[in-house]
Image (cartoon, rainbow, N blue to C red; front, side, top):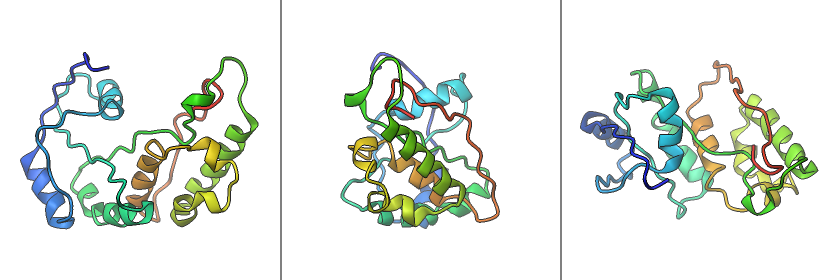
Length: 173
C-alpha cells in the first residue's frame, strides 16, 4: 500500500473554509493520504484531478464530539465540496474467514443499516448500548467512525442509499 501513489493536490482555500467553521481542526501538510482515502478516490477520480483534503480521526474526542464538529461543516456541501466517509460497518480482521458469514456480523450490519436509514445518529454513536454484537463487529472503531462522520453531514430531507450490502470474508461489511 505504501508504494501506491495518488498525486491529488490539496486546496488551501478549502482548508481555510474548514478552519473558519471548525477552528479546532489543525492542518498538517506533511502527512500523505491514508489508504482509506486514496483507494476510494482512485476509482472515482483516477486522474487525481480534484483537490483532496483528509480529515483524520481524533481518538481523544468521543464519537459524539467528532460528529458535532462534522455537523459544523455541512455548509461546505452546499458549495459543492464532497465528503466521503470511507470505512466499514463491520470490521473485524481477526475473525475473517473463507466461506460463510458470522451471524453476529449479519445482525450488526442489519441493525446499522436500519439506524442509518432512520438517520439515527445518536444510537449509532452509542451502538454498544443496543447491540451486544458491537464488540465483535467493531473491536476498534477506526473503520466505523467515518460512517458516523458522513451521517453527521446528511440533511434530514436527503435520501440515503447503499451501494454495497455484502459481507466479505465473514467479518467485513
